Length: 69
Image (cartoon, rainbow, N blue to C red; front, side):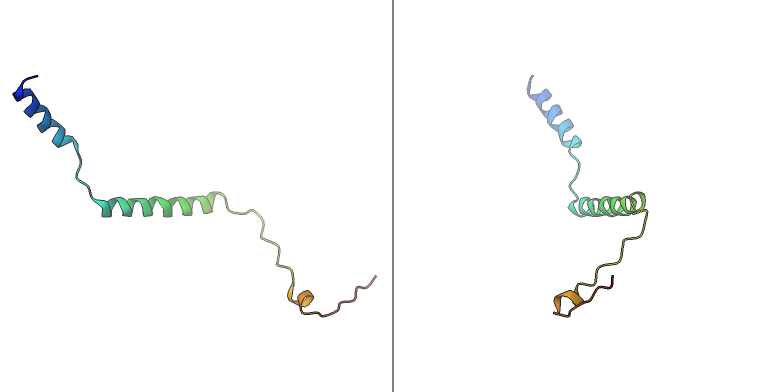
């Protein structure tokens, strides 16, 4: 390779490098995350409603409970 070939190759390689735009990259990452979050929530939503939580406050306050048989 001579000097002219080196210059031509360097010129071609400069045109391959895309300009950096970090703001756009960050925006795209956030958009992909939100789309995945929405699609995952719609495709993998629970089929049945969740059971109600247990009443733990009645047991932890020291109240006594009686069970009928």
